[in-house]
Amino acid sequence: MMQNNLYKAKHRLWLEVLFASFAVNDEAIKSRLYEFSLIAFRHMKWIGNEILACGNDYNYDRDAMMLYKRESVFELVQALKNAVAKTQALYPQTPLGERLRTDDAYLMEYLSQILKDSGNNKEITAFGMQRKWENKNLDKEQIDALTMFLFEESYKEYELILVYAYMQARTDIALHYNVFEDLVAESHFHLKSFGNMMAKMGILALPRELHELTYHIKDLNQFVHDGIAEEEAAKEMCRELSSAVKDEELSKFFDFINFQESYHIELMKKLL
Amino acid sequence: MIRIFNPILVCIRLKRTKIHLKLHTKRSIMDNIQLPEGMNPEVLSHLMNPQNYGKLEHASGVGVAVDEKTGEYVIFYTLLNEGDTIEDVRFATNGCQDTVVVGSMFTEMIKNNSTSFAQEAIQKMNAKLGGASPQQQICADMVLSAFVASMINYENLQEGKKEEMHVLKMKESCEVQDDAK
Image 1 (cartoon, rainbow over the protein chains, first blue to last red):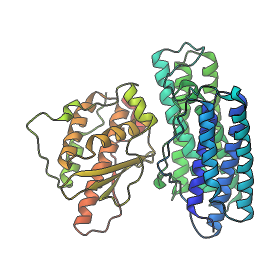
Image 2: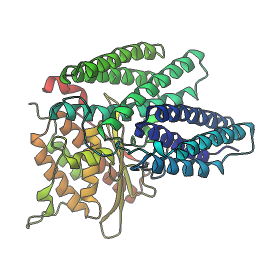
Image 3: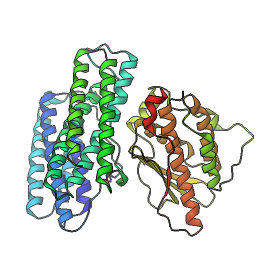
């Protein structure tokens, strides 16, 4: 029978793979690890569904998790490999368990391939706290604003992914299910964007753990209204940041995110 | 600037906890209380790795401060030992990063200290918040109120009342920011 400890382990592994993808500078490895992180997230979803089908429940608790603040790609990949290996023992002897095992075996093989090429062993700069953006001349005020924005929004996107996924798993209304699916996908993209930006600035950090008060939603209408207000606030932050950061490329990016938030509001209205 | 953080309100809440405030005549370490001022390395460190974040099993008291207008909350877990010392604390929030930084700093400040020290810390923080932005004041108020709520919960449990957690509703909301600027 699927249990919460497996869900917690997969939640942890999803974050480990995801944040490893943010931390690595090599675009090919980054992209591949990100794909594996999405697979791990689907694993979470399936495990969660089986737990619910058994009449049990899962939560988003994390046991004292820290990021792998490693200095080289090899150190990070080795740590990740160990984490994947450790999780394998928890998989049940079911079709889903078999799928989890074979996916992870392929991930392990990919990690092993990275370790065979010494050219991959580059320095990790994602945790250096240098707070600089290469090739961009941002002053301290702009860097501070960008830093705060990234911390606020990376947590918020992580929160939204988990809250929407939690609600998606518990709805039997097709429209709601589809809206949550879209919102989760959108937040994945935003978290990826912000996580990579944090890594670029040397401030990559794990979003804080969600308390159940955040995802045990008792009133969907209130939740949607609060969510719309939050999206409006995020749009305002994007607007402010876009005008504060005197860089065309970054300004365009924040405008782009701002427009995406507008459509999230429309999606959320469908839940009312 | 509209003064949103209300020291009188906190004092009233403190009286409700029936914890007697013992004023120290000598200058305490709380004279060195630091609040988030800009993006310095200490603030960045609290942002990247908030201290005492999460849940605490077997807490003596659990308190929540909630802003009903925005749905933001802070939940505070306090574990007291027999000698009135705050043995351990945890907090969690769905609020902004200011709340996280204040919560991280405040919990570090009161952990392994007495409840009277904690109350003095609240008053000191309160005094220092006069110069903070309205949003920081509200965020800090939520953290402090959640701690106070945890103490109320502790006392209610001591009196035999059945209460999973004590909830305090915030009078001021983060939504007022535009008016306050």
